[in-house]
Length: 438
Image (tube, rainbow, N blue to C red):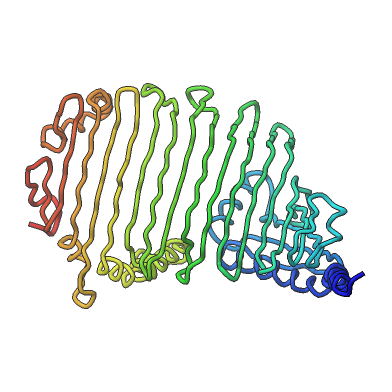
C-alpha cells in the first residue's frame, strides 16, 4: 500500500473521528448566532438558550422563543383571552446536533447526511402555556449548519387533525425551507402548505394550497429589503350570502436600497369573490414608492409602531415632524400603476402618479410641499355600477353635475392634474378647491 494512500486514510479518519468534538462548538455558536440575529432583526421575538449538553459526536440543546411587546403580541393576547387562556404561550424547540465535517452520527436518523458542514440537526417543537403546561406540535425541523456558518432549516409536517370540543383544525402536509446567514444578513424562504381547515360549530374556513418564497436582507436602517411572494390557490368561508368560495390571492413585494434611498413595489390580486348584487368580483393593485429617504422613513415607521406610547396628538406630531420635513424636502415619487375592481358590469380602474420635487431643506416649510407636488389621477367607473351606487347615495350625482365625473361612452371618467399649486379636473381649472392655494 502506497504511503500517500495511508496518509489519505489517516486524514479521513481524523475528519470523521476527531473533527466532531472540535466542530461541535462551532456548530453550537453558529446556530445561536443565527437565531440571535434573526430575533434582533425581527424586534418582535426573544430567543433564549435553555441549556446545551455538548458531546463528542452529537449534542442536545433547547431554545425558548417568546413574543416581545408589539403588534403581534397584542393580537395573540386578544385571541388567547377570547379562547379562555391567560398569558402568551412560548415556543420551545428541542434540538439534537450531529456535528463534524462529516456528521457520521446523523446517519442513524431520518434525513441524516454525510454532506460536509459544521453540523446536522433535528428539532421538535412544543408550546408552553402559562403555568408550565406543554403541548407537542406536529412537524420536525431538519437543519444543516454550513462551513460558512449559514443555517438551512427544513420544516416537514405530515397531515393531521386537532379537535377541541366543537372546534376542529385540519392541516395538509407542510414543507418549508428557511436559510439564514448572520454574516451576510440574509434570510431566504420557500415552501408549501397543502391546506388549512378550521371548523367551529359546523361553520368552517378552508384555505390552500399556500405557497411562498422570497429572500430578504437586513439594512442599517432597521428594515428589510428584497423580494417576497405569497400565493393562495383558494379560500372558502361562511358569509351572509352562504358559503363563499373565493378565487386566488397573490401578493408580491420587492424592495431595494440605493445608498440612503429606498424603492419598493407591492402587487395584490384577489378573486373572483361573489359579492351580493355585484356578483363575482376581483380586486388588484400595483403600488410603488420610489427614492424615499430611508432613515426618515424608518424613524417614522418606528413611531407609528409605538403610537400608543404618545400621550397626545401634539406629542405624536413632534415625534415625526423633523423626519417628515426631511422626507418631503428630499423628494420622492408614489405611483399606483394599477387599481382595478372587476365586476360583471365592467371595471373600476384608476392610476395615480404623485411626485414631490426635492427642495432646500434649510428653507423648507410644510406648506411648500403643495408647490413642489405634481400629481395625476385617471379614474373610470362603469355607468351601471355608478347608477347602482347613486341609488344608495343620491349625493354622488353632484359629482356629475359639478364636472368631476364626465360621461364617455359607458364609463364615467375623471382626469385630474395638480401642478404648480393648481388643480385641473377634466380640463377645467378648479381654483380655491385646496385651502391655502389660490
